[in-house]
Image (cartoon, rainbow, N blue to C red):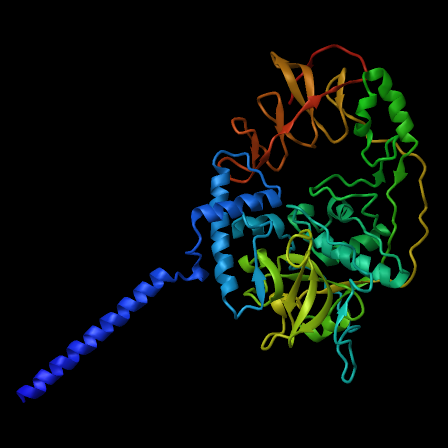
Length: 502
């Protein structure tokens, strides 16, 4: 019995020693072989080098005190996420340091997503593209290869994705029907389609199709260019005396004093022409809802406007591959589907985004297709798809219309004015009266108290110490303040010193 107890004690001692050795070997392996998927191998100096290179590549600069350091922390967190994601071989796509790498996910969603879900939207149901038993569709299609897709555009930080989705589908069907690929104007939708849509604050593609029909067509990108912010609907495109689309202000070098302003305006007046309705559509319809087969059939015939949920961090930082990341069906982003295909047995949709060609696969994302156990498709792509209908050629361009009164300059007082769409800001004030004026190159701008700078209406808080404009007090989102330019002498005469309201 004593021998058995001694043997048992020896066995327990050996097991404990072996267990301790194993534990020690695991600890020493972790210390000697860090898990790269957790970014523990990157030092702050290495990340800073990557950060500085990224800043140069994307032309980023921060004006606020401490903002660069704060953005570095966000960048570092996103880099950690990227390393961990790309080390996981279960993903069929990669993420990377794209233009959104210095934004938190909340900031990204607030600035770049803009499709609105409307409870009172009238559905334009149609079985045009409902799948039929026995019909054969192409195994793959890419409307880029067929010349029906213009180069990728960039919506900027305006939530106008709905306009880019709409225009992309209209550009596509116009090329298919007429043979002409024409880049059309998203800005006309942002400025003028305001009955239900809300410009940079979001909208819906079906409402935009409805606007184009009622408007009698849509203008070209060249004639009505994109500005990236809400503007006043301009049914007349003004051409200056040199043929540029810059309006009166582009001729300010010709206006040394008020004696020249009247003949200058009159000469430009002769070049005034009505905004053209270059491309028309006849109607629009919705793809049968929650049916990837119907969406495939629609895409076999034309590019299609689709809404997706794009608010996830993986979507924000998407770089390449077939996206199979986590996403739901809270539709918050409008894009245009331009094809479908299969790679290594994995089906995908080809989707054109509106975030420039440095996001994703040169501005595109491939999203997995034919998902099991769901009817909505990846990120809800099959929920709210729609397409324009075009039955024939576009009407002839009517050319210049009879002259209409041009929009006048912004009048500061009886002696001075600013170019159209500018804000008059007082430069020299005495007892509530302004004796000298400056021009801020934005409508409804905030005139800062330094009498030198000004801020956009959506960044109305002047931070004079940093030379920036804030969305609200304490808000980290800032843009650089604008400089005022001297107001031009006006042609009217009157008493000096007008009561200052600026």
